[in-house]
Length: 422
Image (tube, rainbow, N blue to C red; front, side):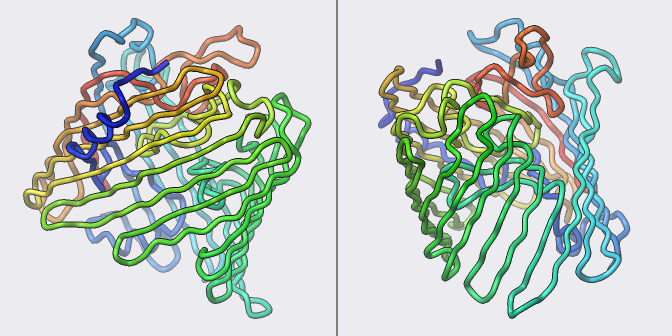
C-alpha cells in the first residue's frame, strides 16, 4: 500500500510545487473534431480540406527507474523504454453532418525485446451523425465514443468507452443516453447511462442501468443529482449525490484555471464519499482493461483507483498544477497530487504524487518539444495476469489487467522525451 506523510504537509508541499496546464506527457488526442483542431493549429503540415483532415502526434520516451522501489519486474513493464506512442488521426466528412473518425495508436513500449515483439496498433473508429428535429439539435455516435464522464464523475469519469451515445440539445438543456459495451466497471457486462441537465448543467441528474449477470454483482439501478459549472474567469465547481439501494455516494470539488503573468495555474481540491456496498463487490476486485500511454494525464482520484482498496471511504485530495513560461522556447513545470483516503475497514491510504521538469521548444512557431522530468507517479508498472490467474502478460492497451491495481503507482523515475505534431 502506498504510504506518505500527513495530508497537511502534503497539501502545503503541493502548494509550493504546483503543476502545469501543459502535461508532462503527450496530450490526450481526441478522436473527434479534428477539422477544427487542425484549422486552429497553423503548424500542422499534413493536408486537409473541407472533406478530410489528417494529424499525427508522436512521443518518444525513455524512463529510468530509481529508488528503493525499483524491483526487477519494473524493468519488464510495457513502457520501460526506449519507446514511442504515435497517434495517427483521420477525419472524413463526406457531407456536413456525417463524420467518420479513425485514430490508430501505434506504440512500442520498449526496444528491449526487439523491433516488433512489443509493437502494437490500437484502432479507434467512430461514426457520428447530426440532425435537427422538433426544435432540438441531435447527434449520435457509434463504436469509439472516447473518454466519458457522466454527471461530475462520481461513478464514471475520464473512462475510455466503446459503444454508442445519442444527445439532444436545445438552448441550455441537454440530454444524453450512453450505452457502454465495455461494462464501465468490469470487462464483462454492459451499462446504459442517462444524463439530463438544465441551465448549462446548473441542475442535472443521472440514471444507470447495469447488467447484473457478471462477477461483481452490481446493483441494477443507480441514480444521482448534480450541479456543475465552469465560468469564464477560470473558477468552477461540481457537486453530486446519489447511489443505489445499498449505500449512498457523493462528490464535491472546486477548481481554478488561469494565468498570472508568466504563470499558468490549475488548482482542484476534492472530497468524495462511497458507502459500504455501493457497486456490489467491485471494491477490491478492480480490473484495468485499458492501460495506454496517453492516460498519463489522468488524476489519481477516480473510482477505479479508490476502489482497489475498498469502499466505505471518505477521500480528500488536492491537485495543483503550475507552469512558468520563460519565453517561447523554455518553460518549467511541476504536477502534484496530495491525497488521503480514509477507509473504515482497511488502513488509511496517504500519498503524494509529483512530476516536475522542463520543456524546450526548439522550433519557432511550432509545438514540438524536448522534455526531461523527475516524478513518482507512474502508469501501472508490473505484469498482469489473465482472468484465470495463470497467464502473465504486460499491462498494455491490448492486455486487460485483472490484478486489482490502481492505474498509477508510486515509483520514482526520470524520463526524457521528445514530442512532435504534424
